[in-house]
Image (cartoon, rainbow, N blue to C red; front, top):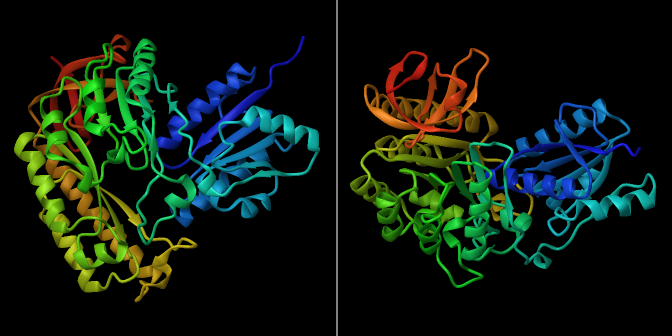
Length: 431
């Protein structure tokens, strides 16, 4: 009897990576490899990395060392943005067997065979990012209540601080017909919510002549899917038509996540972003005009080169003035081969840290204010998982996390819940 080879997976970074890891795992399973938890001893480990900051690189290295310590004889395979950008750096880490760039991360079974023929030599399969033009479909099914569906990849923007175009390549996408077919597969698996993911999903249609609005319209018709969320969309690509469609859609949730990055036009110009604070504020107000209860999350980066104390204060005050729900705060990290390295003045690390703390505190204030509005109201909640304390957690349509003491039968169901905002968070009671 042949013992089935086992593979543990670990994903860092964005929702897109989670979709891709699950797609890789399903491919491996069709080739006879059994999926196990990353925390278990396995024959192979696949680590899907992120490289958006130096902290992400550091976490990737830590997970490689952790896998090697657990199972020194395992074949450790590194994919993702870090693998594309820094393959030689990764090769030097003890235990690494394969480093696969963007062209080969979906071709792991063949690369394993190639590696095993080589013996003990580390195999690096890297490529010029200009060679990557094919769109690889992916969606996740590991979480049975929510699936990340990849609809777009790559980016044609050239922001001064960002390496994503170097790691992911040009903007490209699946066809709407293919996305709808995958959504139907997800629905058949019993998943209730789809999160549309990509690098710049508002740019959907670049390679097929379609539009993101048309994609939403078609996905709205898929039976079995009860919720669709847009993971993130650039403000200059968030059209009035998209906002109005979400407002009346059967399944699109009243939830937007919109990158701002800086609340100062001077810093936005240095970043080479494609909008102004005036446009951004207009989009926020337009959303709330059509969907007054909408959740709006915003990305912001602190400490980028050129961000003086005065410009940071502008950014802080601008964000504080917006009727938004929460912030995702990133601290600037130098990335090789980016134009931001040539921008002055540089912001000292300790000041970046101080600004990050201030923005995180602002986010907590904004979120508390937003969530409190829904106390003593009834909202639909999709219950997802049971916690150690016996409570189930889930999210409202407006992306508020709710805890409730309910029975197992309510898992992966959407039910109306009375909300009570307490010192311990939002507590729900099924009505």
